[in-house]
Length: 260
Picture 1: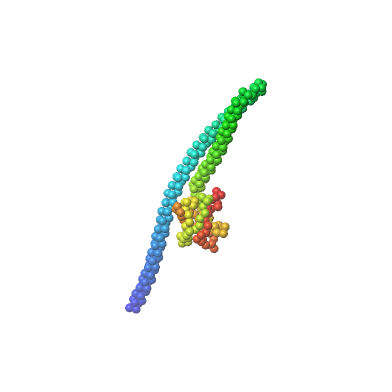
Picture 2: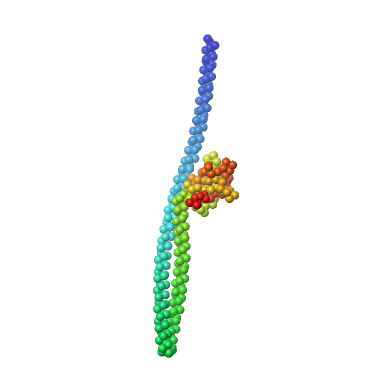
């Protein structure tokens, strides 16, 4: 009987030890999972803070660009008014020239009938001088009008450029002038950092292409943008298993985004 009790006791102890071992392992696993989740939480909080700062910067830049567009539009309006006034003056001088020419023709006709040019010579010289002065004035007016037209064209080009930039940013597309490189890679978290930010034309939530030797090897989704740096997630389906991103890989706006 004592042997049976001893065996049962030993069996119970073995079971208790096995259960304790399993509980210890499960507890340790739970601790590891908790630590991992806390680390992920810290990273996500940092990303959220960076994204909020980038959003504020983008809004400020949008406000500044809107202000520039308003200024350029006002300048364009003023120049259009000046152009209209210049054209009106040009038309007036042209009409005056035509009127003077008619008067000259009348004088010539009368002179031909009278046959005495001595008395008319001083008047004709004065009229000729006036016509020459008028021709110079017309030439200067035409030159001024041409200069104003060139300036107006440049202003319209600048305004259109500002409008296109605003439209690109509003569509969550990085600017076509963007040319940068991968500055750092974090494969564990699936994102990279870039060598430029707002100043280089990176726009939050835009898609970028990673190129190497003229070939697109991966695509990125911009998650946070600062003034001189940005971070972007690697789009998993865009990169082949045998391709490894490298620091220095060229990054440009996504080609499909430009075609849109």
